Image (cartoon, rainbow, N blue to C red):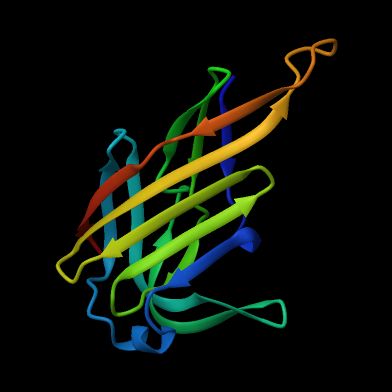
Length: 168
């Protein structure tokens, strides 16, 4: 059985390496970026001018700001791992629009229930991007109604990805 999990927008935490105020004048090339992970899965995202999630929450409300944003589509990148019970799993970052600081590094981190997903995007000024991703999950599973539950651990190991700008 294959499990596919996606982080919800409300549960994702965006950590910006530099101040969000710096992102307004970012020199990143706008357009669609395509590439692959080290596992051979496609990566697809865009760099756009828009109103973005800043990674700050005030009074329980996610803060936004106009600027240059990382816009993720299709739960990119898909990261595949295996659980200790032999079940393959696949995770992906949440879709959304995240403010890019001048450093070009956007860290997405989510902890939902039993799993932890971390993805870092490094956007270059030359129309290229790289990144890393990793997930870890632990849960208890009863293989049948009469069987005792067992601990299951799922792990992807480090997965890297590269993408380049393919157009506007």
